[in-house]
Amino acid sequence: MKEKKKISNSVIKRMPRYYRYLSTLKQMGISRVSSKDLSTRMGITSSQVRQDFFSFGGNGLQGYGYDVEFLHGEIHKILGLDNIHPVIIIGAGSLGHALAKHTDFAKSGFKVVGVFDIKPELIGEKINDIEIMHLESLPEFIQNNPVDIAVLTVPENYAVEVAKMVTGLGIKALWNFSPVELNTPEDIIVENIHMIDSLIVLGYNLNER
Amino acid sequence: MKEKKKISNSVIKRMPRYYRYLSTLKQMGISRVSSKDLSTRMGITSSQVRQDFFSFGGNGLQGYGYDVEFLHGEIHKILGLDNIHPVIIIGAGSLGHALAKHTDFAKSGFKVVGVFDIKPELIGEKINDIEIMHLESLPEFIQNNPVDIAVLTVPENYAVEVAKMVTGLGIKALWNFSPVELNTPEDIIVENIHMIDSLIVLGYNLNER
Image (cartoon, rainbow over all chains, first blue to last red; front, side):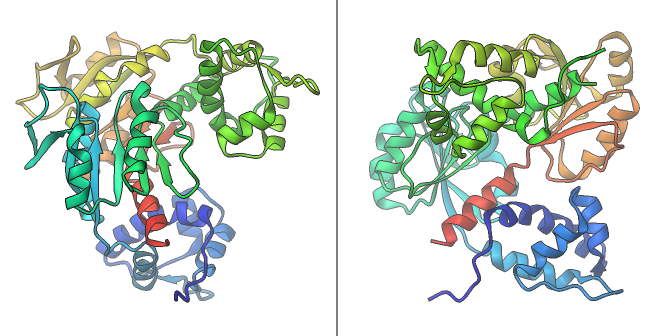
């Protein structure tokens, strides 16, 4: 039974950024940091920073600030960055290729174990030692290889169908790059990277000047 | 002088998703939609939906819902999707390539006009008719071509330096894919796609099961 406190989703979403910044400080040999400095870096208020850290027992000291090493270690544990998650990528277009090659994922415990597509000309090609396989062979692959996460880099009109297929095969987590809502069952964990949404917001803010 | 009401940033961030969903409804020939249906699709409360639309004058009718065509048109106008934004991509690695090829951006008014890198073997290569140029030629390029947005797909350790360079050349908006905080001046608009952060949150939620 876990004894951990439940940390809210909005706090968790800020954790990777804290972690990144604390990693930089650690590399620079800086041993303590104030909530004010962190808040300036993150673009949030310092009371928010204090609240976030308090929620998992990180307490700063008046006039001293936070211990960088301690915070870094705690966030590392909370995020479970020592776990290795086997990942498959569905859709070996240019974005799928780019993600398969992305070395940062491996550093954070995400290991690409398979890449799938349906285009005959792609099957058999290798991306960093991983062979592109036909989507038809996915059921067999999953029987023989544990897979935690499926990355969806398929064209928009295939996304919902492919999401159904992979969750039907027992995969519980989707990292979705298609600009659609997948409407998966409640027990499926989905993180979306809706790139075009972010670009549109950027364009809006530019128009508003 | 603009007469528009100022719409809050958190509402704006939801707009592209509303827009996408309304586009789908429009394509399907559906002329009205309830706040309840929209809220289920978006994973937010229906009172939030009503509040969001109210903020720009979209009012639903009791027992009728919202007019899809009207809402779609209003959001299109608000987001300024008829504007064309010239975009350059800095960093022609696999992610830079993938973004340069991404046809959805062109559909939403973002036109890639130049791709830049420093690796000699990449210079002169073409991605969809756009030649990869050396970063040294960027100042001259910007003098002769209007550029609204710079996409940063450079390695992490170059990101801050490149951000300084392009904003120093007068570019006011950055779409940053590097996993760092750029700490740009206040008048620079930045949207980050921190892919690894999203993947880490996905991994966390998987670990928590």
